[in-house]
Amino acid sequence: MDDMDHCGNCGGEVTSDSDFCPHCGVFFEHAPIIACETDPTNEADGVCVICRKAVCEQCCSLSGKCLLCPEHKGLEVFSDCVNVYQSDSVSEAEMVKSFLVTHDLEAIIRDGFFRHYSQGPAKVFVPIPQYTNAVEILRSSDTPNDGGGNAWLRV
Image 1 (cartoon, rainbow, N blue to C red):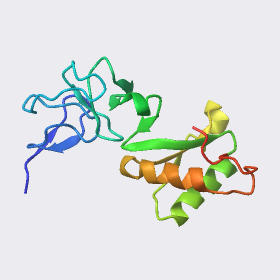
Image 2 (image 1 turned 90 degrees about the vertical axis):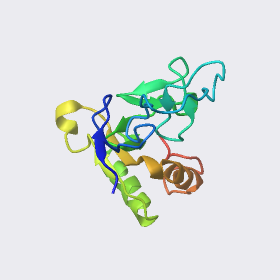
Image 3 (image 1 turned 90 degrees about the horizontal axis):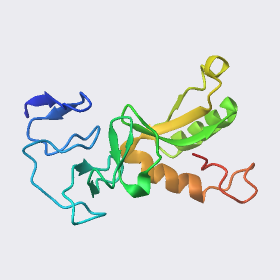
């Protein structure tokens, strides 16, 4: 069994032999030096938490303490989950959550329960490893209220 440590950046639990934190993407001191995949002239500082592409400080963006590559810039990451849908309608977000669950994905709604206090949208999150699959499912779905477009995919 691997010894466990905590990431100095996000506090997430990691195995002591990990090169990077799976929760936030930062490289640890003992990680090998590799080039940024976006700008190979720079040394990578970590990996995108979504796709694991090596990124440098200049190329990455942050969602909280999580590193994101340029392709995933702007995604909202929360507690090892990523936002795949949001709506001002809690019932619509609940439908999207149910739809994802019928496709054997985990989904949670955040902010919707407290909307009357925060006036924020209801957001559907899936675990980071399920993000790509969730996006593909939402993009390829014909739904009653999308008029043939991709209304399910609104982040």
